[in-house]
Length: 320
Ligand SMILES: NC(=O)c1ccc[n+]([C@@H]2O[C@H](COP(=O)([O-])OP(=O)(O)OC[C@H]3O[C@@H](n4cnc5c(N)ncnc54)[C@H](OP(=O)(O)O)[C@@H]3O)[C@@H](O)[C@H]2O)c1
Figure: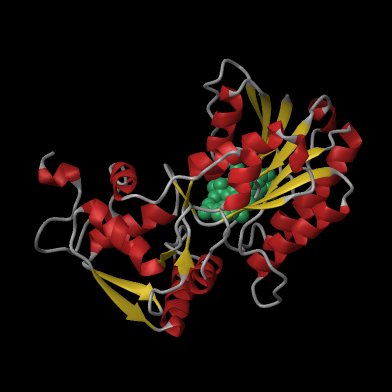
């Protein structure tokens, strides 16, 4: 198939591009171009720099596409881009594009946390996008992942940086919210399998790991993978909100955003069975061994560690 991958240069996008190219599809990646997308697929991946939310779409170059995968998203509102622009306006533009180039098939990646919610624009705009697709009359399948981990992710990268920086981890509340982390390879496989299965048109499928885990268990698994001692300290939610708000005011790449914090407070759980039954994908469990592999290349937070005893967990500092 000729597939347009909107947002194909991001964390999930790169893995989706890899998976679709491996299966022999010809791909056109649409992204503004803030990150590079090296074509390692014998010329089968073309990248076009464009702002989809602004409707800056090269229609003529996109004719001939059979399907569109939408992975465009942001984690926080900025002066440059709001949730409304990126999650809702961009979807309107893609639906219009699909009509103009007669590409009826869509795979839209939403999030398990999508819901109508005036207080939380991330959740609300992801939900609005789902409604636009459901009303579009196009051949749409919606995938709703939980928190995704894997090479280049936010979750393990940020946890490992914090754990190596200090031996105390301020967990959200009691750390009892439920997560089902799902490996990015499994999410990419779900996208590819969805495209291959027209019988999934009209379905909304949750894409989550097989085991519900408390947030503190997730943190403990990552700490075990680093080989470092960690005291997990419950902290009030108001304290977390203030810290994340400050981080977002002061840092260009904060460790967490208000939208991500809200998902940790609420949990991100789902049902893994429909994806197994309808796509034949059984996501792998969240294992210490996998995290131990992933944590190797992660650079230090601020370039140093405040751990005084027992090392910082950086292999290079242990002389390995
Ligand atoms: N990561 C997770 O744990 C997770 C969990 C559940 C659901 N999701 C959903 O999965 C999708 C992908 O997430 P991700 O983590 O891969 O995000 P990401 O790394 O931030 O990637 C976002 C992609 O969207 C592109 N983009 C942003 N604004 C754009 C615009 N105006 N026009 C064109 N392209 C634009 C980005 O490229 P440019 O910046 O160059 O434009 C990038 O390619 C999102 O919809 C997200 O909500 C993610």
